[in-house]
Length: 579
Image 1: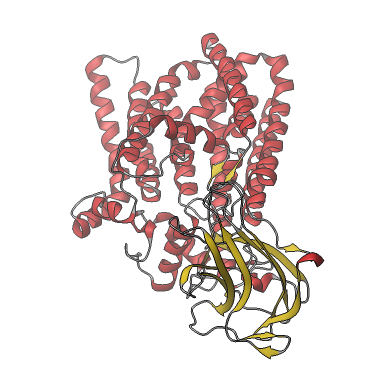
Image 2 (image 1 turned 180 degrees about the vertical axis):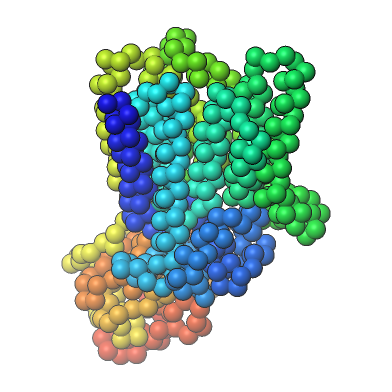
């Protein structure tokens, strides 16, 4: 009965992990997950030109190539001749501001075709790798707990059902492969602690380690945990035979890793004069120049373990409640470790702690070198060891009666959190195009750009307190299909007609380009009016023009059917000293 229960619980948790990652991959717009455009572009260049990207054309060029080599055939099924990304010109992290990174076009809509199809296939690969991680975590927790399926469920729920995990694994990223291979190495490490492996098996484990390094160089840090596992597996022997056998085991392990990953380091040494290509790393990353704000970075690690990335996040109360729940689970784990009912848990705990320590030290060194390291995904390989360890301790600490009731409750709770993270933490960042008219703002004249875009009406808000920028509210109607690159430019001019400032972007300031607008329907939106810090108080003139992005010519304007140049005057903007 236990075996039957174990099989179906394992299948269920793996299926839930896969489903969550796939759903996130379908819902989150392309390019909005952590560093996703760069990861896709790496695979696109590899598919299109059968070469590695250069530093000047891709930020992620310093990454090893394994994930991208696996993804390139999938990406190649789409259109790899272009990278049609439109940056959000109004991006800001200020409250209420548009914090989406890109403007999204009709080409991304289902049914996927062209470049979007290839990108989604790369996302699907990440989702499959998420399922591999869930499988390995479940199996690791089973080994640690002496065969408790509840421990496996808790481990998967505590890592793979997290909203951030689904966000990362619903995206095109090399983290997915690195974590999958890292979690398999954790599973094999626990096996090594239980029973020493033959050299042939160690060579195979070394090959997996080498592949993990080719997914992400940070997996070099797995060496500490693997060495500790080999040493622990040789316990019970006299000192010298134990040392001799452990050294031979490490040689076999290192040989496997070196055969696979050695050529990559040799290539880096030839091209950049360093096995880790540090010159390339520094050239493609924001190098840190000051001290690390450790408290801020550690807080960021915790928040991003649940959900936090460029505008995405959960309410403050959620992080407080989740911290309390985390403390409770840790208390149960400590209780389980104290009981130490499982020999595997007793002997494997120091090994897994050393595994995690290796990655934490690696993260500290990385944080001291570059910016933007307050992201929990950088420590997912450490979590692949710690979460099964905590899950096993918590399962043993609860006792059978409470465990049978708490396990399904925890799974259901984490599913709710996963859905809540998507619905409340991510979706609001990408608001759908707003429809609707405001009769009070309607223009008395008919203003049309190039006979295809009508400016139905507008309103200028001068702003309020200091830091509250003035805004232009506008209502638009497409008279015929518009190109995605239909870009509005708002200009501010002084009394003498001199240009004070300007800003260009999507006419409605939204996350979706004009080619997504339904024809004939009024679309509403607001755009911040750009003002330099040194602007003097007074009255300024506001005008607007439309052009196709990348072209010099402006769409001709007609007012009540009469040609009116390239810009339409919208009215006056009052700038006070408080602004």
